[in-house]
Each structure stands twice: as structure tokens, then as C-alpha cells.
Amino acid sequence: MTEAPVATSQPFDLVVKGERVLVGGEFVPATVGVRGGVIAWVGDSDTDAVSASVSESGAVRTLELADDEVLIPGLVDTHVHVNEPGRTEWEGFASATRAAAAGGVTTIVDMPLNSIPPTTTVDALAIKRAAAEGEVFVDVGFWGGVVPGNDGHLVPLVEAGVFGFKCFLVHSGVDEFPPVTVDELEAAMRVLVEADDSLIIVHAEDAALIEGAAHPHSSSYADFLASRPRAAEGAAIAAVIERAARTGVRAHILHLSDADALDRIDAAKRHGVRLTVETCPHYLTLCAEDVPPGATAYKCCPPIREAGNRDALWRGLESGIIDFVVSDHSPAPAAVKFAGDGDFVEAWGGIASLQLGLPLVWTEARGRGIGLTQVVEWMSQAPARRVGLNAKGAIAAGRAADLVVFAPDELFTVDAETLEHRHPISPYDGQELTGVVRSTLLAGEPVDRSAPRGRLLRREVAR
Image 1 (spheres, rainbow, N blue to C red):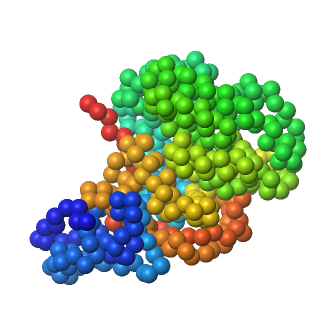
Image 2 (cartoon, rainbow, N blue to C red):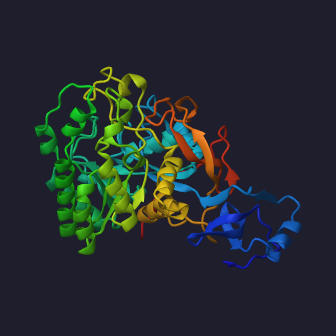
Image 3 (spheres, rainbow, N blue to C red):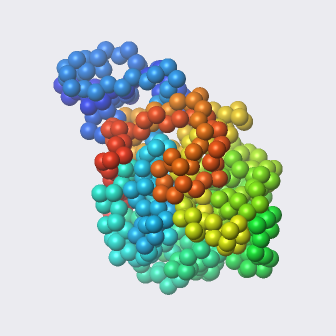
């Protein structure tokens, strides 16, 4: 199983030993040697080479997993709304990345909204990076944004290191990040396919169909669900597929909630459209039938749909039509999240789940007979691969030593007051989940919630 020879004259900084280490898609007994923040060696747990390396350096740290613990790579969450600067009272880099680390997430990619200014120019990106500098507890990358009229800023943003570009086909919820038309989407695609083959990620709901639906002020979740019809999601996804096929761009559908779109997505992939799709923990674990009247903590867009739809999304994941799972962490203060006193029209649409994603998905997955190795693939390796974070997402020689000690059988009850994100609001409050993150290591060092050591990442542009 040894992946690389080890020079005993260069001892490791850290050695991790365990009977269940996720290597090459399976849990095996293994020892992991870390040097300079990078995994330098992975081998059998009783190897003499590691023992020699340890013995030559009395200062080498060792970590031995308990019998009920496993070692997995840090999760990669490519869909996080940090909101700083401009709406830092909604979240912020420090609180968001502490929550990420507490949930076993070692890398996030921050959305271009709801910060002010939004990340639609290089100057705005510089402002955001300055706000994040010295405040992050995990590694952080950045998305750029496509809005009407900013086509001239896309190539400079690619060169500045954004990981791709987000756009909306419907109102984003904030006026400073307006939606684009399908023609404007195609124009941006044509720029991006030539700009180092950058990635475009789309909030796919059809504006006209949503505007044509009824939007009564109501505490009924059924009324809210009807205001974001499946047809709106399906029509927008069809438009993205058509324009991606026409331009050859790499495209990605955000937060899929409508399982009716799976056949169309599958057909597009089979016909060579360079398309990937994500879904989120709330679509996989919650269902419309269980949302109480006025419970706006459950509001998100697109919406949580019925139990049968949830089951179909799981089938889409298992079949590979859906590529990965990320949080769409989108918090807001109580005054905004509960605006209207239970009125689903007035309340902010977004769910804060960055810290809970792994136990949420694992709890539901194990009940469906799906193994933890598959969950980690969906939440770590697959998103890392899609955005080009090639050092992330696996325990292997040469990869980043971003590691998580996880107790997959331990039960706990969610207490929103104890979560690390800024506001104690969660639709999962009081829910019993399985799986506890006991330790998160970033570049081989345990994350210290008082000492931010995360890096600000840039996508490397081919020259």
C-alpha cells in the first residue's frame, strides 16, 4: 500500500495512525506521514519506515485514532455565502470558517454575493480578499459574478484567480447582483470558454414562470412551494443545457431541488455537454410535508420539495447524474430570516448548514444503505475535482494534509445555540444526527478556533 518512499533523514512533522483510514476509496489500516503541510507518505500501519522516521526526531507529533474513529480528507464546500464585506452582520469570514472547521470542512469557495460590493470586478475581489485576510480558519477561494454589463471584467477576474463565475436567471434576492437573460448568459459563456476554460455556475430558475406564479403573503409552506414551481427550475436548466451545448463551456447547475430535471441532465451529459450538478443537504434530508406553518427557517430558493422528490434526488446521486453535495450556506439575522412573523414571502430564503453538512448527509445516507466512502466522495473529492483544487479531497502522497477525525457512529442532538455560524438559526435544531467531527486538521495542524491559519486561494491560470 505504500505510496511513496520516505527519507528517514527528513522526519515527518506529524504521523497519524489508525485502523480505518480512507485511502483509495476504502477504509484500511494505515499510517499517514505529514511534512510541511503536505501528505508525504501513506503506508501500512506497522511499517518500519515510519517508525524509523519517528525515532530520529523526538519532536514528531503522533495522532492515533480511537477504535470508534475514522480518518477522512477534509470536505470541500464550493457553495458558501460568507456575506463579508457589506453584510458582515449576516455572517463574516471568521464565523463562517470556524463553522466550516467544526463541521470537517477545510476548504470553502465564497459566492460573489451577498457581499457589498459583489465580486463582479477585480477591484471588488481585492476588497473581499482584504476583508478575509487574517480572518479565515480554513482555506478560502472565491467565485466571480456575471451580471448585466460586466462582460469586460470577466477575463481580468479569471487572471486574478477566481474559480469561475456565478449568475442568476431569476432575481437573486439582492438588488446589487441582478439576474441575466439567457442571451446574456450565452454571451458570458462565449467569453469564459476562451478565458482559460473557466467555469460558469448557474442559479437556474426561470424568471418569467416564477413571476407568473401566485405569491400570496402566507404562513403556509404549500403556498410558498407553489410560488417556486418545478417548471421554472426545469425550464431554466433546459436553457443552460442548450447554451452550454452551443458554446462548449464548462457549466454547473447549482442547488438542484427538482428531481424531474434528472432525465434532461442525464441526456445532456450523455451527449457530451460539459455539465455538472450539485444538490444540498436540505434537499436530501428535509421534505415539504414536514415544514410547520410559518417555519421560515426552512425557506430557501429553490424550495425544499416533497418526500418523493427527495428520494428521487438520492437516486440521482447514486446513479451519478448529480455529481456532489455542498451546503449553499446562506445565513441571515433573525430580523431578516423571520421577517413577516411567519410570512414566507417576507422572510429571507437561505439555510445555514455549513457545520452540519457531513452528519446530515451521513445520517440519511446510512439509513439508505450508502457507505461513508461514497458520502466523502460527494462532499470532498468530487467538488474539489470540479473546481480544480487538485491538492484537496484525498488522503494520498502529495495532497494537502487536510484531515478530519470523524466518529461515524456517535449520536448527538443539534443545538442551534452552540453552532459556530453567527446566528443561532437552523431548521435542524433539536434533530438527532449520527456522526461527530472530533478534530479537523488544516495543512497538518489542528484548527485552533482562536488562531486563523487559513489561506486565500487562487485558481492557477494556464499561461
